[in-house]
Image (cartoon, rainbow, N blue to C red; front, side, top):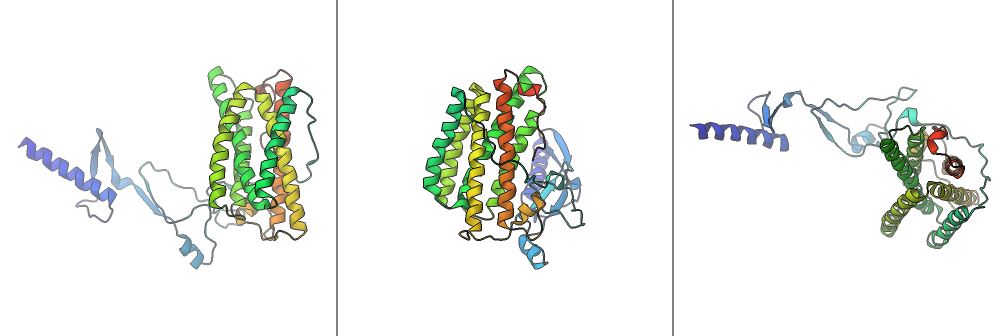
Length: 324
């Protein structure tokens, strides 16, 4: 008798689990409780939300949501629901990778010609390390600046994440504030990643370029991680010089656009929303704001290195959060 009761319970649980795996399997009751690991959960309170497919959005006259691709069935027992966000004009915000309050208008008046003259051995090592990395990049990409920019951003987004992570861990170990530098460095990493998401809409990488990204990122991440542990001032100085090279690369990109060697196509929708560009903005406008971003990252990293060179810690100087 006990075995039969146990078997009945087991069968009931199995049927319920089968329904979760395949919603087409009917349930005898609308309110079913499934015992799992000693916890009883009421699956009748689960919320189901079906997002529009790209085809549905295209047929309705709107552009496909590049931030939320494909059909998704979201099952939420925990009551976590996506926010419905609208723009200032009342239209729906379609990007899930960033929010309207994270957008900004880039400061194009920043001085692009600033340069930190290397004086110490550490500075010279950082400078020539970056210069040595430029030669193979020139050989591989030559004048394909769209692919070059995309490749550059896969590397440029690493230092901010590594630096922010290590400053974060240091703050935890020492039970101290970071002066805002965790957020500032992670902001830099996210901004560089948004550069990549933008250029992905302009230049499509080949399979061998994707393979190169995997190899370069694996090597650079670990090398920079080790370098930051040994000497943060060297690591930030190297990134400062890396950003100076980025400014040079984007300046050459603009020259190619102005000379007509690269087609000045309309700006991707993601760029228009992220940098608050005009609706008729072009690729040239995108390159301009990206170059300005790189100049700001140059300033932040040289500033961080200067703090360490003066024998101070980052937490002693307020971080330039939101410095665009």
